[in-house]
Length: 408
Image (cartoon, rainbow, N blue to C red; front, side, top):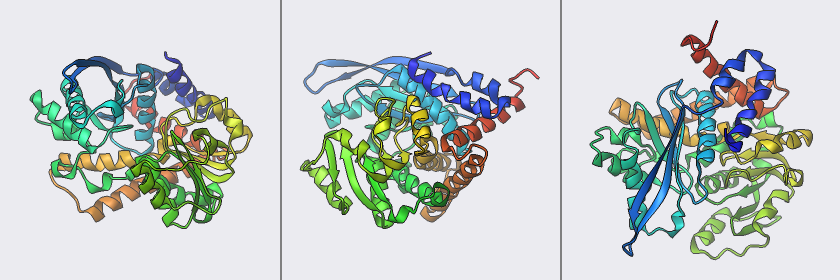
């Protein structure tokens, strides 16, 4: 087992300590169902061929077809894909979605690609994994450095392999080929919605809170906008190049416009946002931002994970000992997967519900899961990560027992 996956699965030991009846499902989830590694080849605009490693991890399918994003990243590897597939398995269980967990990736620097090369890359991913990606088996969606246009290209790639179900095998698509408007910004909006609904449980007045946001991508930008619109003061925002800070609050829209123009005037380096005094620190950038090496530097009352695995398992005990509350990724970044589920339903039903109906279904699903976490947290001494994992494992365990997977 890889170190990343071993640490992620190791968090389940505390869950089994809380409920020993879950030891069998913990063992079942210790390894992925399958990890498929293949090679993609694209022709660059200058005529030369470039090869890239690509993966699809179908971690667990107890609840149904697997579901998970596809990311383009130079740092992508099999270990991280497996870890992220594990987290998606728990997320779908916590949200009571009819999916197992999956994840995909291509090891490539996406920023170096032209639009034409990028389309070819996503299209080729669809072609190469056409035997796996089907609406009843495994469904792809956007992730780090991928967009609705990449999903459109992926659908095209699936069609090349005579996959008549291509649209149902990919979500996060443009609206004109079966996507839904709700998907835009759903991850960041969902994080704010859940935080607002759980504010009393967290002991926070979120609408008057001082908030720092690490990450100005799709999720971080949407979260910052929601926070500002609700009356919170966003005092800091950062990306990989640096940190912006204003004690009196940043103009979020101005920051995002200036970033789009490439003219941000940073006042601190990128890592400085971790130690700035703040009520809520939102981690919406990359995995393993907070680790054992810097967990003592956090200066926040509450840390919210929007990025998958933003807090390393090695930092958990340090944050607990410092009484820093954590909003776990498997709940707080779930707005995107719920929106993707609703898009998948459009294909399954052959019709589209109204935007109002979809918004209601989306918010109801998030609210129900937030309440489930809050109720379970009462037996976990307020530890939200432990509560989320406990609820998810109980759900998966019930299915495994019903299927007769464990010795009686």
